[in-house]
Image (cartoon, rainbow over all chains, first blue to last red; front, side):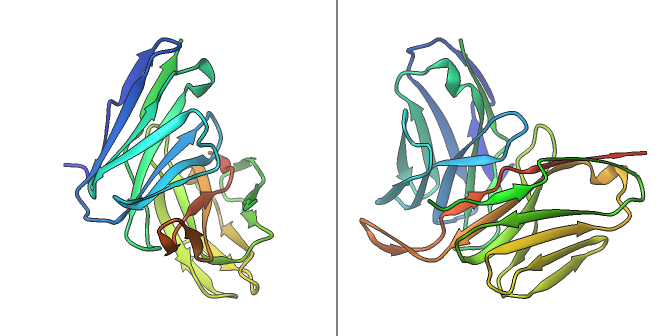
Length: 111
Length: 119
């Protein structure tokens, strides 16, 4: 089983719909991150969390919200999806400032 | 605003050539990492550098951290088609304060370099 699991892997949704992307990890790490990747580009930080009571905005948090339900679970929500939120979304975890481990990504298309 | 500038954005070379990718910021990093990403996968760590002036080698890849810990480079010698991929630098900045107290570990990525090595 993967250390970092994202669900769903692919999703097509309509403009205005609410959608949740889920991430769970089995590595026991305290830190979890949500990133967005557009074609041919690097990763942009949406939100990050250092524990269930510590959630911080990244560079592009507008239009997104998150919930850290447990140390192992960190979900990303789009309250009202719009087409320019079409992208590849990655969840990552790490222990302190060490290596970040990524899920396989969720490809989201908003039509 | 903390910003990581990575260059070049695209690099297309022939097998056997050498290349260098740069990662720069106006801020000081507590550590910097280089990742490689294949299509359809998440990034995978290549190396972490933490000390100013540090040089690390991984087979044909050489990573250097600037003396002031504001910049880094990745040099590939005798590139091979298997080196093709997206290379990303990522920086962890000095401790940042949030509502819960002082915390480390915001991880910010550069824009990436798409490397294509032709046989």
